[in-house]
Amino acid sequence: MSATSSTPTATAELHQMGVAELGAALSARQTSATEVAQHLLARAQAHRGLGAYLAQNEEATLAQAAAADARLAAGERGPLLGVPLAHKDVLVTRDFPTSAGSKILQGYRSPFDATVVARLAAAGAVTLGKLNCDEFAMGSGNDQSAYGPAHNPWDVARVPGGSSGGSAVAVAARLAPAATGTDTGGSIRQPASFCGITGIKPSYGRCSRYGLVAYASSLDQAGPMARSALDCALLLTAMAGPDPDRDSTSLEHPPEDYTRLLGQPWPGASAARPLQGLRIGLPREFFGPGCDADVLAAVRAALDECERLGATLLDIDLPRTELSIPAYYIIAPAEASSNLSRYDGVRYGHRAAEYGDLLELYKRSRSEAFGPEVQRRILLGTYVLSHGYYDAYYLKAQQIRRLIAQDFQAAFAHCDLIAGPVAPSVAWAIGAKTEDPLSAYLADIYTLPASLAGLPGLSLPAGFGAAAMPVGLQLIGNYLSEARLLQVAHQLQLVSDWHTRRPPGV
Amino acid sequence: MSLTLPEIERLAHLARLHLSPAQALDAQQRLNGFFALVEQMQAVDTTGVEPLAHPAAALGDVALRLRPDVASEPNLREANQRSAPAVQDGLYLVPRVIE
Image (cartoon, rainbow over all chains, first blue to last red; front, side):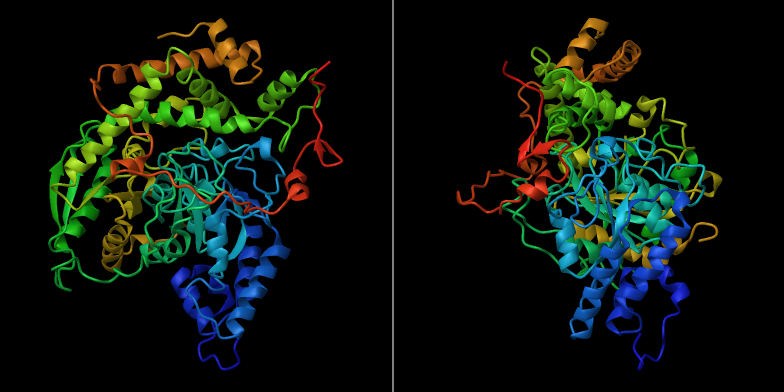
């Protein structure tokens, strides 16, 4: 704490501060990285019942905080310097175990940090720990974690969404100002929506996948989850950028400052009507009877706000929206069955106690330690890739994926971005879909199309639906338009307060 | 499309999974339920449509990169084997493979 500070920050309020606020307070030396880290470590302990964290390491966190304080003391400044955050447990970390929510990786210690983890650390961010998620990111309720569910802070009997459920819980419950997530079919956007926070899945290839425990490699993408578009932009600026030597699918586009358009009006618009000229396409398929009325009402209200800011709303078509479900649930398990063949009980992870030969070692180790949903997807993927079925399923799904991507390009000829609900309902009760994965697959319908096309998608709080649970508004942009998505989300957050609402008791 | 139990068992073998009879039955029901969902895909005419493997390829050509063939990683054997279930003298232990 600086002796010269004129407005010392009360320790009791540190967890209420977002990334930008904390960064400013740290830069002004009104608080220290160590003080903030200690406060949030204690807060995480006090709220263990939420199931947000899978691993913490106080010693490592405080060492990182001390290093950030030393950089601050030496005069260095940066928006993330000393700011604490937590990582989804599918991003590997040297200082913390990485389980990917699976028993098969229980206690696994990575010898290296994922690129996005290393980039955030280089920017001075302090890691508070690793966050709960569905096993290998396969799930949409965090109820497929081998380490127990995470609980939605708005109603602890409900799911936080998934697979980045722990990330959404940590941010919404003010256990961390921000978190990383990963999104394969909606795993950043849907939990952000269910927990009333902001999250962005960048264009495929924006963030390096090096050190992201692979689920479906042609879809996996890391991104930030925080309380506002501003905070997401600050994180994404540090996370994204080419990683040509370590991720062959990393895009070569140079790093960007994703905060550069925040607060600016849309090109040609005035400050009074900052979204004048913005054309927002509303896919008819996203506003049909498949979406709950309470969700649609909240989304419509947020879109009305966009209109008041000058935006034009128009109906568009994404005619193959429904096909995104079978296409995704063929492509993703196919890639998963291949990626997860590396867990063999030999080089790392769980090994069965009893086995005869090598084959039995493989089979027993994998069956004992993979959860039921992971085994189902491995079987499904193995089937669709097997001889005689490849063309009918995998190839067909990849062709439909092309058509879905083309549908988006046709839509973007008429609009600048696309908006709609994130999910057809608010968060459901824990356990409601655990035994019926098919119903959970169907609930992914509004997030899968952008995932298959590799487009950036953002979810921001848009009010509340049934049982006073949060509803998210999804914004989908064309390739590489993250800064524009964040600009529009920020304009909306300048005139609304949905993103500042806190769960009861938080 | 409907998978029989022997087909499920063969898939489990290919996937190196050991399923109990109850698990195999459960897998059969769930996979067959899923294939009902997939059937709608077969009605779509995809003649001449290029499969999209890399989403950014929708943007334009994605050239595969090559990097110089030089060692970039240090030897991290100890760190890499820290999480291995059974090692000895820097080697991974497995059941005897060749008699």
